[in-house]
Length: 278
Ligand code: GLN
Image (tube, rainbow, N blue to C red; front, side, top):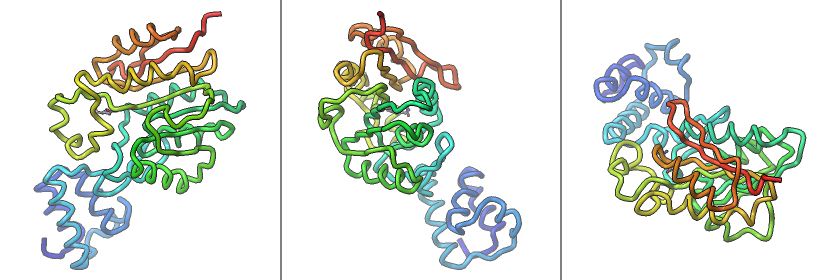
């Protein structure tokens, strides 16, 4: 792209990519917000800015997710730094956070565990909203742990402790009031892995065995010894995995088992309470 004005840059980019994506990329290059673009449509881009913008538009044309290009994503009421080391937070995962917050009294000090934390979106949002609670967040990927620690520091959330580990392996003998997880749950031969954003996301965070349930069943089986009696386990899962998740929970000492729909009406989170029957 020749360097030109803001309007010219946007018009050029909109022939090739989505209009909002073009705007977000230009805002990123100019370190400006939407209001700035609207207020100064005739401002000239420097040649450096024009080159950077054109490189980003090309990457977007090749499918690179907008979140990885601009390096951040809003989730719940916070904004997280996101790199290619972590899954891009999805709006449906906000349901998991909402269900978790409902189970954590604001005036009590609860212990919460987030398994496979990635960017830390779930753990950090919960910790921010429940400052009395202590959250432990674990991820197998050291690069993901670095991103989530950066997010916790940047958002000034001190009541979350983030560490590397393989599900429960690094935990001492401790008990939690609530365990949450958005584990990998896509079947490894699912064609969606070769489509859209998923092509660029870490496979470690996405796919889990032949039917996608390998990590979910590992978490459900492991959870009871890390939960207090009456503690909750809440898991995000695939669009067709709710019944199987409930079955696994039933077979593992959980009661009050329920599945919850996301905004698209798809059962997206299932959970239960450990030995809640008294
Ligand atoms: N929700 C993601 C998707 O279907 C998958 C996330 C995950 O595996 N936890 O694209």
